[in-house]
Image 1 (cartoon, rainbow, N blue to C red):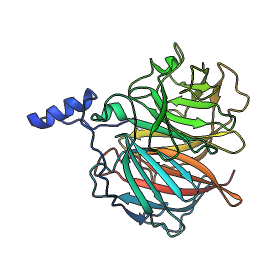
Image 2 (cartoon, one colour):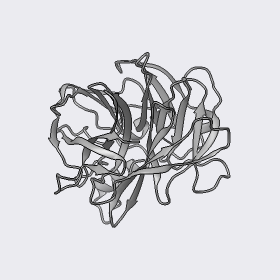
Image 3 (cartoon, rainbow, N blue to C red):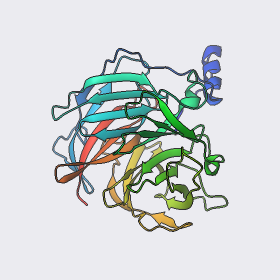
Image 4 (tube, rainbow, N blue to C red):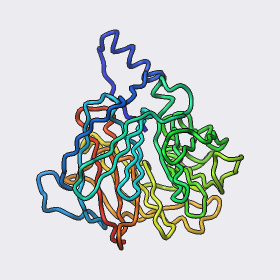
Length: 331
């Protein structure tokens, strides 16, 4: 979901830009081809470098990413494979790099997503919010929130291979749809709506669609489930654990604390059509912890450990940050 502050008494040019944004016709700012990016280490708790745990997570380090490129912002999802990182933004931009234990990004690539819904000229058409990957083929799937569409790409993000606008997602909100997506080990694809609810379902529920196979091939019909986030929170991403359970990243905005997030453990194994799922909290990033607008979550093995990465979307606001944080899971 894209958050936009509202302003009064704006000059005509600014009002025109605001109306374009509200209508989904805001012009998109692409990244330049020559990548420039800086990384600065950050603590888990600003001002207290001794704090290393939050809930059942142990902090392994993190960085704040910046760039002079005007298109460098709004990162809503990420994928990590070994030392290779892929970030996608709600501008339809792509950032890839390698990074090892020195926390120094190398081999950077800035690019457009090679295909997507609507026109690449408009940000609203290329609002990429979710990302998942097939570890065997390396292919990627991206969920576009404003169009409730899923695109599949090759392993190098050089071309689009397929697309779908599932009938079950067509009524989802334009700014509350395919925020989270995960490919399960058996090939099923899970899509979780940020504010999308089952038809006539309770307000607290968020709809889950569990496709039996790749939704961009044929017309597989999904199983409908639901997830109930903590009161006041909305889901912003999911990550699959090796045992088949899910981690769900949930987010809240409040004037007092701005953005805060929690991570819940949700057991989807054996879930039946119509089942309503609830999670168990494993971490709460309320102050004093880093608590920006985290929208991307992924898990990978690192030796004998399970490692969680998450990234924040700065909403193109000067008071927010692009934070990339790393944790060990102690489940």
